Image (cartoon, rainbow, N blue to C red):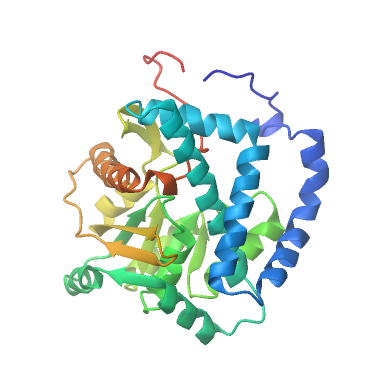
Amino acid sequence: MSSKPPRPVAGGRRRPRRWTARLEPLVPPLIRALSACLQPLSWAAVDRIGRGLGRLAWQLGRRDRQRTLDHLALALPELSAAARRTLGRDCFRHQGMNLAECLYLLGADRADRADCAEIARRVEVQGWEQIERARQSGRPLVLITGHCGNWELLGAALNCRGLGMAVVARSLDDARLQRLLAGLRGRFGTATIERGSEGAARQILTLLRRGGVLGMLIDQDTKVDGVWVPFFGRPAFTPVGAAKIALRQGASVIPTFVERRADGSHLVTIHPPLALPEDAEGATAVMTRAIEEQVRRHPEQWVWMHRRWRRQPPQAAPQ
């Protein structure tokens, strides 16, 4: 899996390729234009377009395509090369549909009530009683999930039911894209707490103390405080913040996932609270195991192009 890394620049950020740098200013207006084009269409038509975008990305995205296949070989070695290639193509089609669905919901002329009505038609929620029971206990709630299914629909579906969830997420590099993404979440009552921003810790504490719910995605290798825990049998550097918050605040940690069904609808499943050990590393391992179980159920709906194992512990052999 070794490849020549791009040259680093000041601050540790990778230097973008020249053609990429020239295209970056066009991305936000292109997103708005695509969103406007999708508005007159049905949800089924939007998904067809999304599948087309995914197929195009599979054909043109040589680096991400190869990375996806390499990661599938690491995580699912029992599959044949042909099966992994089919799975990789399905993954790209799924991510294309995720994008198209979010662009569809981003439309500025859609009323909030119509938005939630659309979500209710397309997203079934199972296990809501887990939320109700956890709230009756009086403990704060932390929902953990991963980049499975259409994770933006997960927050929308739950907050349309009045959950009052905010999410902790990394701020995008482009401020215009960040505003678009935060605006999409905000249409359904999902506040975005920008990870590492000034006042983020205070926002989290205030939310939990007021009976709100914190949603966290912990399945990516990012530049945050983390620990090494197993993921598909390999050490993976995993954010530890969710575990620390849950243990310090005595929160109930509820694994919650969304998956795309064959008929184009979506299913949100809220699982019982996890029994966590009292150390942050062990708790993170338990949370990660729940995410891995979901990915194994629907491997085509996870982000295999992400460099999940880009770092390894010093004692491990390099990739």
